[in-house]
Length: 557
Image (cartoon, rainbow, N blue to C red; front, side, top):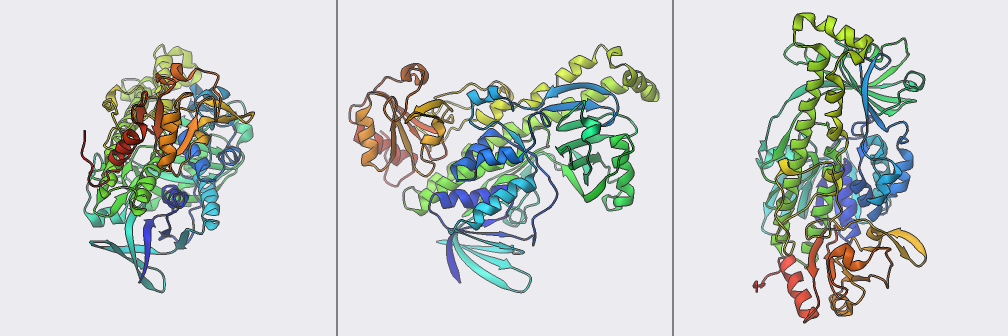
């Protein structure tokens, strides 16, 4: 029976990122997935700035991912339609994909099919010697012992046992490991049922006057959402399905073809590639950890797709967990550090879930405007607006109310943490108090280090690229030589403003710290501590590090 530090179960984006992030920290892992082949369905499509920043930090080129995604012109709008070729009732920008976003991130959001995104991660995994990867292998049981976990791995022709220190369960929304651990999900399990119909068609001519990434359809003769992954080829229709009326198993190609044809609304050829049922949920795991097993991604939270937050929330789960597992495995942190994974990430999932639910609820307001209050006159009411959308005084406001749904910049970049792995983080806002669109870069403890365009060696680079994602980084003010020396004495990465890089803005004006102050930044990019002028920098920095890392023997001052 072999032994490895970490077993990662599930080779979706979250599992792949977890293995690659662990490798970036020098930790070996074994990655398994019960599927013999990757899914060919496009599934998720929005990869947001923070996920792209994480990819860049592990050597998966964010720029290449953006090139592989749809152009901002093709995927820059959400449209509210009758059918794809029918009347348009309004449109909104889809997230911030333009150059204005570059003031806040080096990599604006891209729309890329999950299958393409995963292909880039698989390529990185194949080149990573610290990750072993098996397909067609399921983790069928876990037995915890005082020093680790024994996993039973079952393939087509053999069963093996693997002894590991920790397990990351990234095995999806229907997580078998979560169920085996007895971890309950909180929230509604099935808000609505859909049939996902993945089809291929060249619809550039149909959509040329109205390019977009999401088309919400309101014609009473059809319904659902069309997702344009690639207007020249890859499309998905999400068609509502009530399992009490029609069994999902009945939706074969013969039944789905007329649904797609009606949604397009014209005589267009297409080929159906995949059909599968799914249920829209809004659930969060009661706990993210049980012993030495940790839930991540969809195994820990299921969101409605209204907001594109699922995959991206999971990516940051992997980032948060990986550096903490690595610190404990390398003997640099105490076991209690791992408890802060749930403390930090679960509130983010709650905020994202609540917003996704709000987004979904607001969409139903549009049905009320377009269909009217009298069910018996629905077709008549809709028909009038289909001919002349301006006939409704309520419609523009109902469309505008959807804007936050498609501008979640603050949820993507502005999430904060408060836990014992931070020194003096302010209390978190309640989910209902978070403005999801208004992102304001913050230098406070618990916030992510803001992106800044700085100059280093005559080259314009993001400040984020200068930190070390495998170590704590001390960002020192121009006169903070004492803090820098203390950091280097502890083996931390150190950067000094106006020396290692230059910023157009004044250090103190940006950070609110004196020129001899400093910021301590965790491997995941979150600000762990703010330091004013040093009295005894080596002692003070050492005490903070011992506290943040939950090392045994720490006694608070």
